[in-house]
Amino acid sequence: MVERSRIVQLDELTIGHIAAGEVVERPAQVVKELVENSIDAGASSIEVRIERGGFDMIRVEDDGHGILPEDLSLALDRHATSKLARKEDLAAIHTMGFRGEALASIGVVSHLTLTSRCEGMEGAEVRMQEGKRSHVESRGRGRGTTVTVERLFANVPARLAFQRRPQTEHARIVDVVVDHAMAHHAVGFRLELDGRVALDVPPVDMVEDRLHDLLGQRAGELLPLRSPPDDEAAPGEERWTGWISAPDITRGKADDVHVLVNGRPVAAGPFLQAVRRGYRTRLMVGRHPVAVLHLNLPAEEVDVNVHPTKREVRLRHAWRVLERLERSVAHTLQSVATKPESAGAIPELSGLDSVRQEVLSVDVEPSAPPPAWAQAAGVGRIVEPPITSPRENIPSTPPQATLPGLDADPVAPALSEAERDLHRHAGDGACGPTEEAALEGQLNDLPPMEPLGQFAGTYMLVEAGEELLLIDQHALHERIRYERLRYDDTLWEGQRRLIPIPLDLDARTVERVHAGAERLRGIGFELDLIDDTWSITAAPRLLGDDAGAFLLDLLQDVDEDGAPLETVERRRDHLAFMTACRGAVKANQPLTRAEMRRLLEDMRRIPNPWACVHGRPTALRLDRHALDLHFGREG
Ligand code: ADP
Ligand code: MG
Image (cartoon, rainbow, N blue to C red):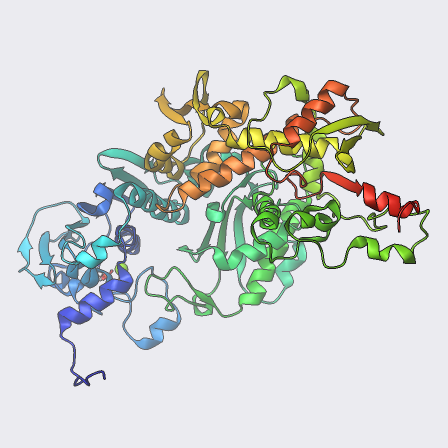
């Protein structure tokens, strides 16, 4: 039995702690609240200093209009704000803040010092330590406000226990400052992390200049967003402006899509679909564009009061606004020709994952019915015989027309566009099967095999015990190469580069380099500052000239503490997959007997030899017994 307690009114401090849980969940959120206050105060310069991820200190200093000495203490009160007077004002918010609870909440879980001076007045200071407030004292300073937050969460051990590493928090703080710097180009921002300047952008007149300061060279490659001419006449006052990348400049994650609603950085999630649709089929699966999207609309049409951190907003005419975005993206891209995939681009990672899983599940989960192609290729038979053997269909088709087990329908889906592209590059520098080291893994249950010949320059005819195999030479070689690349640790060792590869990194990515240095070293990457430019000085042997593109993708994944190892695994998979295909023998490539033998020997040492890396069959199996049956020698 649960004992019943009496209902009591909570005291202020407890209420404060509960509210602080929502508003200040992590240091980066404190930074966000303080920077927003500075923007609301009309600052033209904002300086942020962080020590140890913000856990030791967060200081935000601005040159805004300041707080009157007599209001200073009030600023720390819950629900005390200068930005809202009546509930009607909530319907049209023109400031970043309005809830009047940021400073109060932060002051409950830290030691907070608020110093401010208005034009022509005395400066003053007030302190709040874990909810307890000091008297206001006079303090000399220039116009503006400084908020210093120390010992954040020191009095909330449970909260502290769930925090990320300081390095990780640094990366998030850079994100926050960059987001706001995108939205307010007339404000200068400077960010110092443990004494190192992570970002320093001067106030500028043109958004383009700010973009350049934040994104580097990439900014110049972005296309200004243009709406179709007749959109002007469409109903609604909302307007989209901004920049998007051409379809060939993409990222592995969506975190370079910035959405600003009336100058407020918001979560991009709800807008991504519309953006993608605007790209039509021109974005590869799993790739995301770079975009800075400004939505301007009447304040009454946005509700920012739906979430304590205001990262999410509600739009009154969401559909209309999203459709307008989609049309603008599509219209902007109309003028851009689709470029062929550049050699370094990395196509559909997620597609690969699901395919690989499918391939593996054939081995691992006998209960799952193997896909059609797998059954036809005989993969299903390794685990358990398919319930209906394809042979049972034979009587319905003329026996002369169809081989046993060979359906008229193709067993494998056609190659996707991206795969076709990949295959076009296959054989650029194809590696002869005998030029590579033999596989050393365990033998699978394939018998010793003998090549009988090559058909159409593409298929090997092979005797394998009691079976005749027709093997797709490219698919098999690709699979063998994948196995070799994926599991050979020496290929993932870092190799010093004679000529370092310079990288064009923006502030956020630089932060990820700092945060992820350790883990990057773990997969063979070393980076150094050379003449102020981050450069790759060592990279996994396998990568060669793809190292730069690969690293940029990888860096997007290292910002949260948990994920990266899994990511490295995925990245290894992906890279092995790409490289495997590129070096494999092509169709229409004559093979010597020695080369065929070598492929067959290697085939005996891959765990599931029946599927290529795309999940298609490597071989068609015709067993002796089925042939005898077909030719009337049995039964
Ligand atoms: P809100 O921003 O929602 O009003 P806050 O708790 O963040 O609530 O701030 C409370 C009040 O303190 C603000 O309304 C504003 O008047 C004042 N204030 C806070 N920071 C600054 C600043 N940097 N410059 C000027 N005034 C500020
Ligand atoms: Mg505020």
